[in-house]
Amino acid sequence: MECVFGLVGNGFAIVVADTSAVHSILVHKSNEDKIMVLDSHKLIAASGEPGDRVHFTEYIQKNVALYQFRNGIPLTTAAAANFTRGELATALRKNPYSVNILMAGYDKEIGPSLYYIDYIATLHKVDKGAFGYGSYFSLSMMDRHFHSGMSLEEAIDLVDKCIIEIRSRLVVAPPNFVIKIVDKDGAREYAWRESIKDASVVSA
Image (cartoon, rainbow, N blue to C red):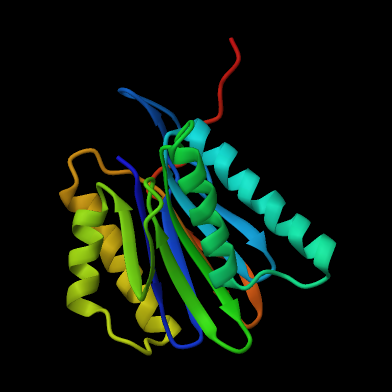
């Protein structure tokens, strides 16, 4: 029951993801970070099959770093999103990745941006977006409360509303979420919203 969502505010973009690693009826861990820092001013939040998600996001991260190493300048957020879409489209005809992506970034000339990329290589620039079962609730909350030019405090309040709604309405709701932000100061972890912590394994 994955939940990934994000939004663009006044001078920043926020992405949020659940932290549950689940297979079938088993929860393997509840502190899996599904939001990767692509470079100093980009974040990529992904949902989908765990193997595809980890492999593909690492592949994109290394290629973005390789481009900057070769050319001396980083990719813009739009360029990174289009590169990601192209790789998904190429794989779609060979060995498709079951992965959905929200890419957030900040560019000096453009400001913050958020890109929606799904597993069949659809790309859209959006102000708010979501993937997973939690999207049924987070999208409805964002439709009701989101407005352009939100302050950081308003955006975090909306994120908390979305998390509360998911926890209270989704039948198998993930307990923990990680919130990351990207703005002119860079990409960084903002906070965790935890209702349970992984218990340490007691050796016999």
